[in-house]
Length: 173
Image (tube, rainbow, N blue to C red; front, side):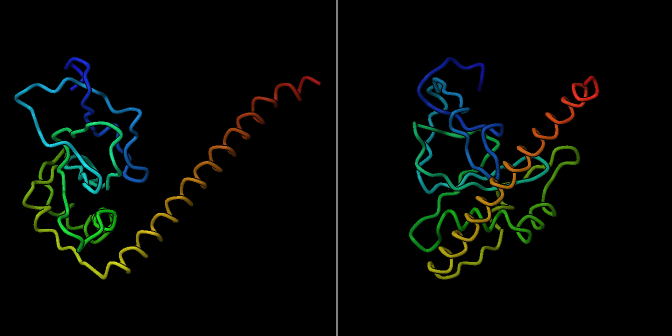
């Protein structure tokens, strides 16, 4: 995608997505999509699912800040109706039971790949909307805690680096 001329359409690639933090929109390349590649743009509520790599994952999209499509390394899951919250769907795909199923069904020996029929056969449990909302709120709280803890760990590491760098100065005094 990087070899295409700059334009107005964003293309989400694997490097732009983190399974824990979502899409880093500021890193998404914008290209002039060739006429032969006209595809329906992503919308709020779409779930993108990574099809390749050591770990497959799903991310529910908030409204994209600009017209966006995704690379062929993703499937776009577009829940219809109001039966399932897209964020709940992404959460469920990212949990151990679904991940174990996906690992078992993946093809390839070096780089794992998930075929469309594998994700289509994935069993999804659909609790009430209220329960879905509660689970998503719980998952969001856990993600916030993870970000805070990562920040604290990074801060402590910087302190340790500064302390180690300062040892030379203390020994000279």
